[in-house]
Length: 587
Image 1 (cartoon, rainbow, N blue to C red):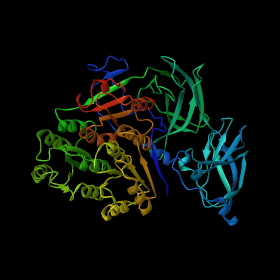
Image 2: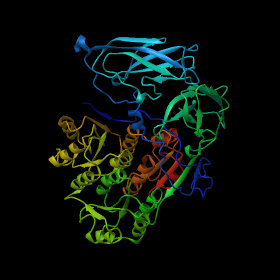
Image 3: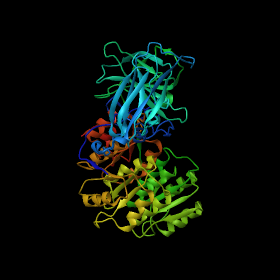
């Protein structure tokens, strides 16, 4: 078991580009900066081809950066030593087996649990001996000549789908199809501030998801690039891989967004040239979602992404934050929405939105002290299937919301936040929501994990307990107790110098899909706007980052730029996020 925390910004997951098209029309801008355009707020639609970056990493054997125990090799009995051997088969462009046509093949043996390249073997046969048993290995065959496509054992181009071996195996056959090639040239509106790379994102035939299979550097002098690929359907994108992204990411064929991109179908032996790119200057497109009050802002947030017929709608108090923190991920788990409500009764603007959404079910989050019986009766008159989920306090309500929305089973993570204050957990709610995982409030004042909390964690059997916040808000003795309890496989945490850095740490650990280009900004000094936007951000797979009211923390702005998060959704009016934030100015 391993507990890890990050005390500062240690690194950045470089992400980028595109779920909604760059707007073509602009309203009056709040900034004189030509790189910032304020636009009408678009409708945001989830793209089924995108999934969480951390999920993509866990499906990719070489990308998982979690720490695991390395076995004591000196203590392994000789009987546990294994060997792996086999041959390479080559397919011609018509899919027929035959002799290699000048291939220069290298087979690599990887031990993913140790993040280690164990060994290599050259030629069309391979043999690895003296391997320690009790752990998984996988094999990948690469052809330096580029004539044959990189292939993992199991005859797949995806490392996450590669066959794992833990026992001695002979007669392994890795079948390499004839590769396809793509080449072209990139031009720039100005000298790139970093290396330009072209990425090849392959569509998995079994799912709509896109996985990056290869990255090719663009020659800085000639602008030329080339790559050898496994046959299949691809989306190609160019971006700046390091330094400031002064050039906007672009998709083939000269598209600003994934939705407008052209998919290329590569058959074995295809050689496509003139797959060119024309990069433009990076711009921010700023959309503000606000209203006369927090309830109208909440309504306008749900209208970004949710249409009539939502499976479930959660209503939470707009006057306090705890119930909405756990309710947001619960709603997202069920493809539902969350609205803030006046706890005393149904406001006309909220009632109108309930009628527009036409939910099949409504959940009132919180007990009668948080959300009145009068409100419950009003909502029930509109949606007969309306129920209350609440408890004696915020912690019991959090547990009850999780028990209702999350079936008993094994989950990757449970997010743990203090119930004493809101800032550190604001960015965790949309992350938990888009991953379909719970956020549990802990009573950090009582000094121990009570039986009810332990039962709540145990019923969902998480592999990881992930806490947010430093020792001042999340006492280490509680996390030590959780680690010793055996309720979770490991305990990790995101710890920043302040709420803004903690927000960044969360979004580094659990990044959005690399092709996402949307980011939500909410003020870190208040809770209402972030809670309203959490389920929307989760629905479209975008991160929610915290900003100061008067400017964006410099590290946050850098990450947004590096990730090509050019579509910026501001949650709240100018009092919450001022004109400098709308102008993407840092501090």
